[in-house]
Length: 263
Image (cartoon, rainbow, N blue to C red; front, side, top):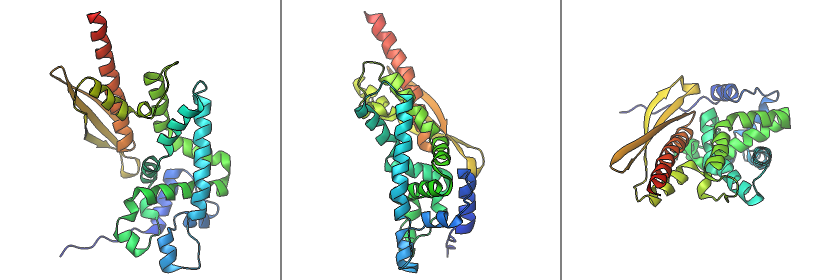
């Protein structure tokens, strides 16, 4: 009979989470509240508190910090375009991946039912908890510390968004939802060329568990030849994004060269 996996140690998981965040709470109760899912409160402490108020606060501060950074770094872009970019950065899947990166899942206090059904890996639970933790950091250390922490965690995705704008949507070109994501831009380019979507394969993992780096290869076939590019990142999504960006740039140069030669 297979041995059942033991539940995570929340105290040890919270300590590791603080290390990855680079923030140690002067009021540890704030972090505990941020990691208390409503299912835990419902089962263990019906009269207590959960992380929903901190999630509300965190949602607002994450949106503000990301908005200010986009306005600062993209002064020529219009409100509608910045909205597209912001939605890419603060959507559920993006925040859930940041939560996975810092190890929020093992630190969560979940009800038994929520835990049994995979709550620690569920994107909606992780993204909400990430916002709650940012709300807790805001109350514990203030806006400046929260900004530094969030921008440090998001630097790869922010840099990718900025590079995407500069490469795909230069001055005079309107940015759309499809051009705000390297993987989507690559897929649309391949569709225009009549080529199947790319595949993404994990080719390596480097570093210790708490600072893992993933290496992904994006591959397609064009004009009878295999074309591929590799990317690396602290999450698989970040590595896929970089691989897609590099493959897009390679194919774009090839297509432009062919067009020039035919004129």
